[in-house]
Image (cartoon, rainbow, N blue to C red; front, side, top):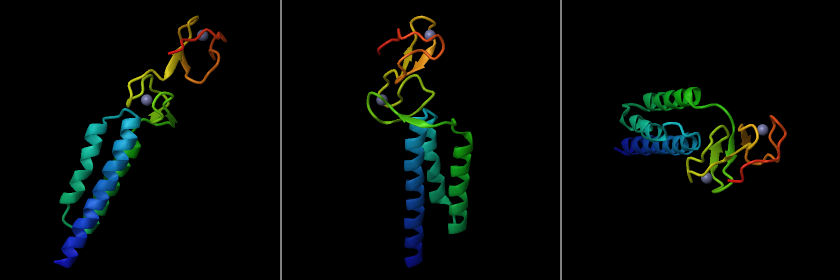
Length: 125
Ligand SMILES: [Zn+2]
Ligand SMILES: [Zn+2]
C-alpha cells in the first residue's frame, strides 16, 4: 500500500513536470502546445516505474526531435519567451518583427537598419 502511494506520487511528479515543460516550450515555439501538454498524461497509466520512466524519456525525446529548432528570445511587448523565427508572439499576439519599407523584407525587432538593403525606414509596430 505504501509503495503504491509512492508510485502514484512519482508518476504524478513526472507527468506534471513534463507537462509543465512541454507547455512552456511548445507554447513559446507555437508548436501544437495543446497536444503536447496532454501527451504526458500517458505516463500516469503505465504499470511499473521502469515503463513510466521509459515513457517519460520517449515523449521527451520525441518532442525534442520534432520541435522547431532554434533559440528563444524575449517578446518586446510582453517579455515572455518566443521562438526567434515567429512573426507574431504566441502569448500576446503582437508583431515581433519589423518590415523594411523599402525592400519589404522582414527585419528583427531590435535591428536599426534593414540587413538586406541598409534602409533605416522600418515599420515601428
Ligand atoms: Zn508577447
Ligand atoms: Zn530593406
